[in-house]
Length: 629
Image 1 (cartoon, rainbow, N blue to C red):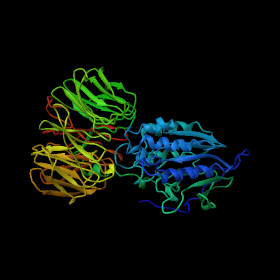
Image 2: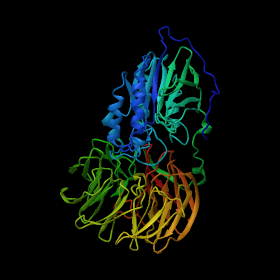
Image 3: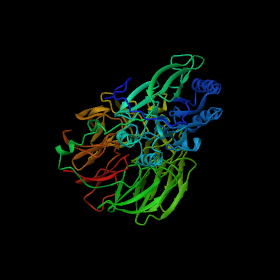
Image 4: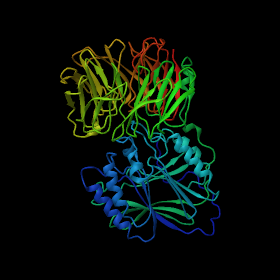
């Protein structure tokens, strides 16, 4: 539970400050939210920058995330142009708006501002900032394994009497960052004065396992007529926070002791519990590996091998029997695309703009198609043709043998993230442009497109992997509506808000049942053959609040899915009875990949009959083979 504390429960122990220490002040700006349309946010930023430039005592400016409301490069460049007019250095990190909604796969921020991290020392104080996610997935914030290693290495190099100020966007606590404890376990070893953050658009003090975490106001005006920022003063005895509304006198709202801070041992009772694994001992990890970086793609299986790409742009072939790496292939940037294995080749997209085709056995490059923007869409294949959408407004059909383009559809106004569905001679998918599309497989011509009527692209049916059966195509979207469209003409067969579903869908092995996860605890099963919305069962699976777009996959007679906090569930497909739970970690679990009993089964994550193992990837960088009852 979040607790806002305006008095620290444990006073720090002071030590003698170095004789050369000189008081200083700096400005923190946060949650700027520049948008492609509307000028208020940009005007608020300009007024703040102009006023900051008149304050001679400001040593530098820290900007703690949410620069672009829609996460796109154009708004970031507009913000940068204004921030570059500051008369003092500024240091900047991304927020969740730069990482969740991003046509570049969260790579534009580093291209515009130079890096997602910063680190510098000023007057004996060490400031460093890093990304707290989430990346693409709708989930809690997350600090990647490589950022935690970077942080540890930086702090190990600092002199013992250095005063530490970490900078994040999210506060480091349960409900905000899923692996907050991995970060605080590192920070508590050092002389941390306070963590500096934003996100909540108001001034708050949190106690994050004993470490003060201070959030400051948004630069936006809100209900006021002008925006504002914070002035933070570091003196020999205290750190003081003042809220500064443009054109008004600053108002102090917080003072914390400055000096030597000892945090002692962590409170283990705050950590996530793995007790559930004792309740279901039949579910076990056959192997688990952590190659080194976060996974945002789902794994795929073929021929005793598992294929997946990671945040560092490395694509792996993993032996499905023991988890050992067979080969790797390096791309130029983060991989979010879930791969497709077909006819001895494995294909995927990268945020470096490339569509790659590798030999599945050796990892050698067969061909590469370079596009002008990131490729986060997940490819699917049929009859020697690969189908994949990108961020350049284009959906492509490429010949598997050589990558030659067979057709392209260039009518998209937003990026593609989903895994398309091939059904009855057409391919179906949603894009982040408010629309769901049906294209002819033969030539890529538009059969139809559909919109839920919402004006904001944040409600697009774009993250859910659609499924199709009985002449209908099914999906759920951020509008929390379960939708069934006629596959032939795109007309609405039914739409229901009976269950608060979001961006998850699954289809039974026989194609007669639909599965979806609700945002609070429940899993539902709908009749795929009915002309009206008909609920077959609904069960309280007791996972709490969850909005991670992890699809539901049938594994034998069991529906399997993961949550944003590392909990894998098995539910009886016929009755909805919860069969087992298994906790793998505390971070996002991507769509599971069944390992079929038959060696001749096709590439997954298609449903597989009689499977008793599945491969699960996670944002914590783990890849796990789980044996289920």
